[in-house]
Structures are given as structure tokens and as C-alpha cells.
Image 1: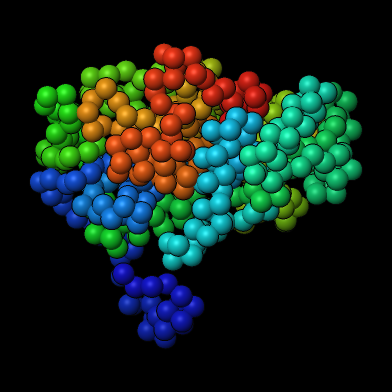
Image 2: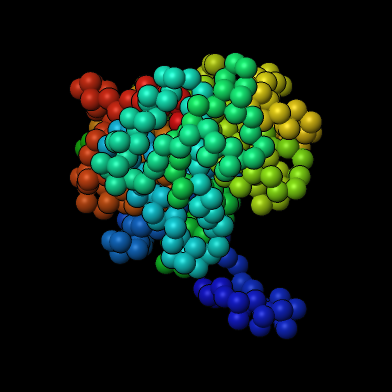
Length: 415
């Protein structure tokens, strides 16, 4: 693999850029692999990458029924934060956030990580109490956050209206090292690194069945033929329940569409990420000048990957009091992604009833921020066959045992 650098760009510029090779190979599937990962999104690719980097397991195939990064990885609002209340959540999200900080160097690929800071607005007295509590918990967890007042919020976000008649801004939970990254670049960077390690990324290869013998997985059937494996990882977000059924077990998740939109490009006006959970909307400005706006999930189970006018109206109506300027913006495009929601709104990284089959799902509406930490933890789980410090609390069996990690109650929002 050709190493990217300023010198390489200059050299190829003199050669009319004719010397660049493919970023990753496009191989045909082999008959057998040590590990098969189903799902070539951020989480699946990160899992494969850390299997190779941390454990030397490189005879790996990553199967994708569509195109690489074409699912939720390419359909999110790119927010990165780790200011969660519950200890297991804070640990895995902080691991992810810390890995994001050096990910461009690790992958030799610019993922455009921007630690611009993140604000979670408190617009009710209940939220003030809740976020102050989270600051105390974060300090104990080693996660750097702070509580700031309305004047400081206005200083950080000049376009905000802190004196709204219904929902005035009473302060905010501020994580200075939170921010954003380029979602496509994260997937492409991991894919390039995995391919360089000799792993096979096989696109347009849908899994149609999971084969097993004596209670253990033996391989998968796909639209490109049968492939044997010793270990299988299911990392397919909203379609996890479909593959689990093929494996003969059920998971406590439901699939919903999460919608988002972007405005027309405008001049730079907001250089932090702002989340407003009371009205349920969040917004940041992209490097191209678009205002990236996210809202809530549909109120019914579905596999729709497109937006609806109802959600656009609902989200903009919620945010327009706090950000009056967006009332004058034109919408550029909207979309939806299929998210997988658990009852406690926390993920599942777990062994399954099928031997040597592992599952990574349930990230709900906050999966992008967790990609490096999720891959790191899932790789450890698959390599060792037993949960590690980051995964032991996220077993699929916690629902049967009543050991919930209830972030929906802690945060007042599902992400």
C-alpha cells in the first residue's frame, strides 16, 4: 500500500496523479477464513482492523451486502462525545473518543477529526440537575467535562438565543474534546488498512444463511457461494435481528429509522456541536458550510432509509426558537438510517447461544461516535472468546438478569 503524505501528493502531482493505486482490493471470496465479519460499516471494519493490529488475526473476510460504508456509517450526523452517565458507557465511548484523536495517524488516512467541543443544552431545571450530576460522574470516570452558564454558552455559540420564551438556555454540559469526524473517511481509512493487512473486503455479498454443527458456527451461505469460518461476527446494525434469526436465536432489539437533514451551505457561524435534548434536536456546521441537523426516530418499526416531511417540520420547529437563523435556511437534502434500539438504549457486545458466533449491535442513534472503541472491544471479545473490561457489562443476557445500563433515563434522550 502506498503511504499517503505531502511528498506523495507532490510527487503524484508531477505525474498527473496517474500513480495512485486502489485504496483497497476487490477480491473474490476464498473457501475458508479464520474469522468472518458480516457488515462493512465502521464497526465491522474497525473490528477487523483491531483483530489484525492487536491480535495478529488477519485471515479475515468482511462481507457487505451493499457497498462499503453505505449503511449507517454514511447516514449519520458525525457527532463524537463520551459524556455518558453510566460507567460502562463512559468507558467504551471515552476509549473511542481517545482513539479518534490519533486515528488519522494510525490509519495514514485523514478522517478529519475535529475536536471542536460539544454542548448539551440544559433548558429545564430538571436538565440542570441532571447535567451537573453527569459532570460529577464524568470527573470520577476520568472524562473531562464541565458545567457552564448561559453567558459562556452565548460566547461559544453567538447565533444562539438563550432567552427563548418556552425553553431558555439555563446552561450546558460542555465537553471541550468532543466534536466531529468525516464519516465516510472513517470507513475508508479502516478499509484501506484492513486490505493492506491481507483481509478480504467482499462487497455485494449478502449473507443468506448461517451454517452450524454441534452447536457451533461453521460458515455462512452468501449470494457469492458458501464460505467456511471458525468464528463469526455479526455487525449489521438494524439488520442484526434478521441474521440472528438465521443463527437460531433472538435479540432484544427493534429497528427504526432515524432521520437527519442538511441545509444549504452558508458562511461559518457555529464552530461547536450543540445538542438540545428538551426539544430533541442537534446541530453542527460541516466543513462545507452546511448546517447538519438531526432529530428523533420514527415512532414505528421500519427499515426505511429516506426522510419524511413530518420529521423535518418537527425537528426544525423544535430548534427554531433556540436558533432563529435556521428559519431562513433552505433544506439541501434529507435522509434516514436504520438504527437498532435496545430496551435500555445501550449496545450489545456479546457471545451468543451459537458457539463461536459474536454480536455487536444496539448502538441505536449514537453508533458513529463509538466506532473505534466498539471495534477495539469487539476484537478483544472475538480473539479471546470471553468478554474484556469494555464488554463484560454489555452482554445480551443482561436483559434476562435485569442488569440494565439505562442511558435513556440518564441522558433524557436515546443517544
